[in-house]
Length: 216
Image (cartoon, rainbow, N blue to C red; front, side, top):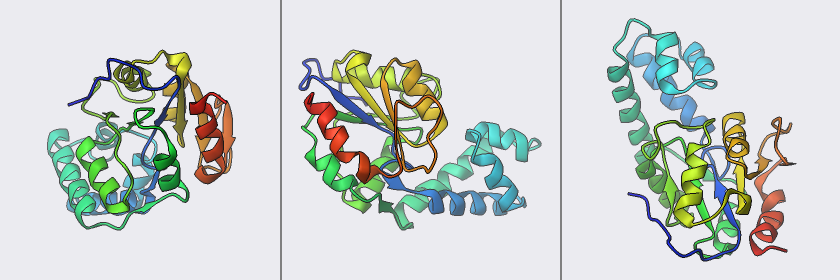
């Protein structure tokens, strides 16, 4: 259940995506989708190629149109939960220092994953967990819809103009832009179209993120 902060604790706020932004989960995603593909007798490389650019239900429709999508999703969730328990995760360089350096209440997580998996990954990588996590279960429409970021702003008691979004992928960048927020793009070699600033890695963005939140 989301925590609503009725009284703002900061003048500015930062909302982080998780996978690809704070935690490097690319290898984990590839392994999960490979295991999923093997369960259904499909080509792992082809499944992963589709999964990279679509949401799970859309992936199932393309690679397994004759299968029950609910059964497909149940298997995917099973494998993802197993990976959270046994997979190897790594936080991006500078993530721990950045999150621990932010004032309490000034930041939140906005993810297309589920909160219990995020908490599990954060525990494994020893990252601090904020009071607010907007996950896939919190909104009807995920990224690139602005709904997840607008809900995060509501939870911390902020206007969109007070908020910075930090994202790695196009759907998240578009979600932040559509929410009317400042959007910075990290951990990719080439900037995603529309992002207000681009940093090739998270550590390079850390000082600017801290300065944004402090209003300096």
